[in-house]
Image 1: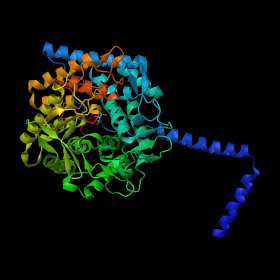
Image 2: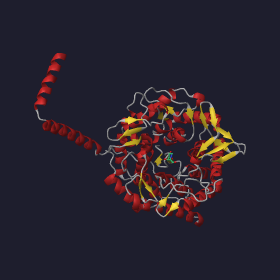
Image 3: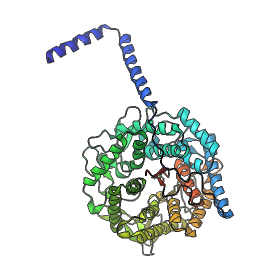
Length: 520
Ligand code: DMJ
C-alpha cells in the first residue's frame, strides 16, 4: 500500500510538473482565495444570542455638590483635550506625539496602525457622556480595524487594551460591532497558546500565528504577569460566544500554576513555555512581575459572583506570602512592597505596584479569617506611601520607582526612574479607597494629581509624560499613552462621581480599567 501511495504521489507530481510555472502559480492562488473566502465566511458569522448580564449604573454618577461637579467637569474637559488632539493629529495611529503632533507607536502594538487610543478610550468617552466622540470611534473601528495584518503584537497588551476595551464598549453601548471585533481578535491570539505546555508566547504574529518570547525575558520564558492576566477577558469571550475554547485556555494555565512549586509561597515571574519550568527566581510587584496575576485571581472570584472560590483561595494564599516576604515598613513608618530577587528583598517600589492598595481594599470583604479591617488598613497604608512618593517631588507627580534605603524614603534615586508617563495606578488606588471609606483625603489627593497633570503634562497638542518629576523645568517625553485615556482620566472621573456610576457590586474593572459586568 505504501508503495502504491508513493507511486500515485509521483504520478501526480509528474503531472503537475508538466504544467507551466504560471499555471501552477494560478492554481496556488485559487486555493489561497478559497481559504480566505472560507475564513471570511467564518468571521462574519453572527454570534449566538446570549442574555446580557444585569447592566447597572451606566449613565449615573452626577454629583449634587457644585464643587465636586466642577472638578468632574474639569476632568471631562481634559479627556476632550486629549481626544480632540489625537483625533486631529494621530487618528488611526496607536498613540499620539502631542508635541511633534503626529502618530506614535511602540513594539507592543506591532508595526501596524490599530487605533489603540480609540479602542482604549471608548468606555471612558461613554461614561463621560461624550457620545459624538464615541460614535466617531465606533465608526473608525467598524470601517478600519482589521486584524488580518502581518504584525507581531504583545498578547497581554492586546488582550487588556483591545479585547478588554471592545468588550467594555459592547456591554456599555450594546453595539454588536464591538463584540464581533473582540471575538475576531481573540481568534488571532489563540495560536499563541500552541506551545508544548499551553503557556502562551508573549508575542504572536496576527497573520501567521507564529509566536515567540521577548528576547530579554529570562531563558526564553513567558512572563507570569502577562499570561496570568488573560482570565477576565477570556471568560467573557466564552460567555458571549458559547465557545469554551477561551475559558479552557485560561483554566489550563491556572491548573498548571497550581501544580508548580512556589518558593516561599510566591510565584516567580518567568516560566518557560517549552519546559514548563520556572526561569530566573525573581518576584516583584512591579516591572515584568507586576501583581496583575494576583489581581486577576481576586477579580475572577468577583466576576463569577463569588462562585469561583478556587480563585479566591489562590489569591488569599498568594497575598499572605506577599505580606510575609515583600511588604515592609520603612524607618519613617511608610509601608511599601519590595522586590524579591533570589532570596534578597530590594527595598524599592514601582509606580505600577501602587495599584495594589486598591486591590487589597477590593479584596478585603470576603478575606480569610475575616481580616477585612486589616486589608482595608493595608490598602490605606499603600495609598499613603504612594501619595508621599508624589508629594516629595517638585511637580507633585510620582516617579516610576522609589527607594526606601540609605536614608531615602519614597524618593527615586536613579535618574532613569524619575519619569512620570501619565500612569494611573496611584489614582486607581485613591478611587478604590474612596469607594470603600469615603475619606475626603482621597478626593483631595486625586485633585492634587489632576492639577499637577494639567499644569505640567498638558501641552497644546494633548498631554505628555515628563522625564524628571524632581526638576522644576521638566522636559517632555512627547507621548500621550493610550492608558491615560483608558485609565488615568477614567479613575479621576469616577473619583469625582457618585458611587452609583459603575457600582463595584455589578462591575469588575480589568487591569486597563475596562469595566466588565459580573456574570451572575
Ligand atoms: C496599563 O497598560 C495597565 O494598567 C497595565 O496593567 C500596566 N501598565 C499600564 C499603565 O501603567
